[in-house]
Length: 257
Image (tube, rainbow, N blue to C red):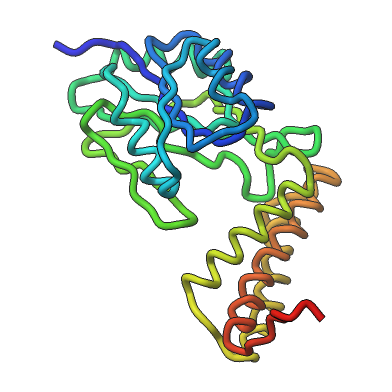
């Protein structure tokens, strides 16, 4: 017969300014494991003080890191979280109740994720409900993915939870811009070079992305934050196309002149 014990698996790297919020929100868990890839800001000490088991593992990509953290959990149920997330009180109660009641053929649970950015909770623009599969019965799931995207795949039935997982997504606008720049670099490198006409395709796709986020998906209802999100989403689309052209053109200036 199974148990209802819950372990929390987290990956981290220099998250001292926000991982404390996550750790406070999962005090209901029977164990917490943090796989750290070499923090230098005190993240490891903070996690140990909160009662978490901290394991060093050299960075090997999101999916590999998360799989490693998950494999370190001994509890029957594993809740996979990121350092910038927080389990709401209602979600914590729902998780405890649902895992106790779970039928043997239920091996996972998904939940909506509600992001906070620029001082408000973002409920439009395609950012909500942003449902994530984050709870898995031990031995019944595996993280898979590439350099940009990872996904928890579960063998067996998955039920949905209704209460949100909070996501403190970016510290500020510049943090989002840094992420956009990094991710567009990786995307271009993976997809390879394209000819000059591809930049104009990017302009069209970027315009469509703004219209989608701001109007069709009602990002306008999120105020100024909604406008920032729509513009940055469009910029990301354009950058991916432009950087793929850059790879083919040799236009990067390596001389610094």
